[in-house]
Amino acid sequence: MRITPNLLATLLALAIAPGAHAGEHVVTQKNKSFSVTRLAVKTGDTVRFTNDDPFNHNIFSLSEVKSFDLGSYGHGLSKTVVLDKPGMVEVECAVHPDMKLMVEVRK
Image (tube, rainbow, N blue to C red; front, side, top):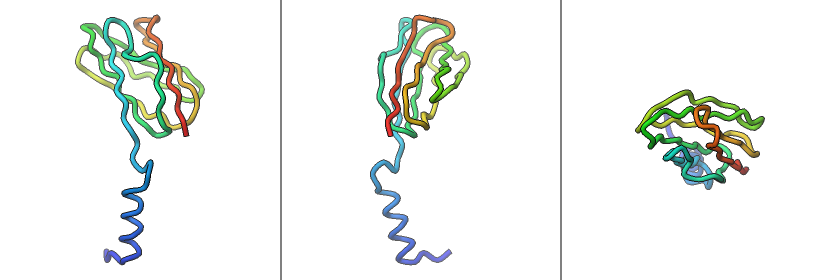
């Protein structure tokens, strides 16, 4: 494939465009709590849930904007979810019902 000046300019513009790269946010779980209770992210961002407790967590959401179940995972492990639509996402732990996190997904 030959790279023409127009193709090169397009590729460079895409590489440096604002918002071209999705962000990653880390939320830890410690003492049966999320490290934050509210989080604001952009559409397309990833949230990584890291378990710092000596027991399993099972992070899920039944929200209309994003429904997911990350399954059960133990100490030192993490699971991720991509939030791909704007709106509010309520995140909970199936093992510890008092654990709640509200994520605002912005455009």
